[in-house]
Image (cartoon, rainbow, N blue to C red; front, side, top):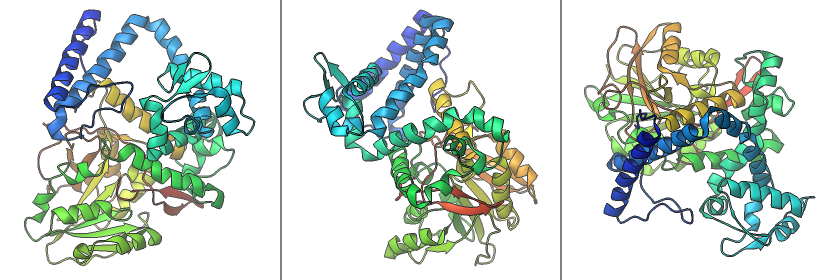
Length: 485
């Protein structure tokens, strides 16, 4: 976890930047990896504990550079620069909506006129030229005098990485308009707890929850793209589910004593449960999700795991069904990326359904962002967390939560629950929040990573579409896409 740099002077920040650049250069040289380049993808460095020095140095460089820019610009020009950020959103909408990148060859160049001709739909050469020239000013595409354009490393990813392109497309066509509609949603509904009163619905002039819209016949394209988008931002990164499997939580300690059943609530096709089952052969698992989703999971479950990984259709807005356990065998209810989709009203309801059947030997493990207090994390990490919090607000009226916000939910259900520990993977940004009945202490391991009790951010939703009827409307939790989330 990168910590915030304290330097705030011109030469102090420059020294921080140079020092971190030296550390990053040393790491790359030792690993025989290429230097960062505008003309090539970033060095392939796995996000794990072994490469901590690389990611710490990179985070420091980004934070020091951004602080240096703000310092040199001064407060007035910093605000003025911020006031034009929406222009980048505008050009990205045109780039993604009309797939301009797909009409630029990966090798060689083309003209604005040829791009406009290929796009059609009333898109003119001047519009293409103005859009691409603006995009090039913030690092997307390279422009050549004479009306030519080529790809650079960033723009080429819109062609070579379709999952990332899907994320960018949804950001441009759904998130940008929804974000602009937040004030209008507040004017229309107040500070609402309902997913069908979120800014997303206001932006399309309908009272409808986003996942309900995605499940309509003409919304299925966005639903499918959403699945790809979640893969695009999660695979191998700070939100990869492997952080939860490989060190984010001391699962091995659950194998002590009479054993454990792990119930993966909203577990999608079971990718997390299957990964855990491979690693911990003495644990049993049950994956719960929509009927059609668990059918897919059961079909794809490897034969060697089928005796220990069961699948059951279940709506997490209702109480847990009875589970077959032996004697004092405990149950760990694992829920990944569930609560952040929901306002406090419904997050409390979800936790209540788990609490009502909890026994002294049972626990709940939530794999969620834990937003730290300001000034603890690096500024870049904090901004990512708060970006995603606003995404949840605009899309679903959900939220990312601080530790105290989680604790308020735990204290409000019956029976009361208590947060025991917050485990933070070294390079992950999702924490594992361990919860028991109030008065019990079944906690495992140390509190967080290196004594830290706060997690970080999160992201977004996965994709199986949990559809739960709430007050006459259908909201969706979507979790896990083809083994990524």
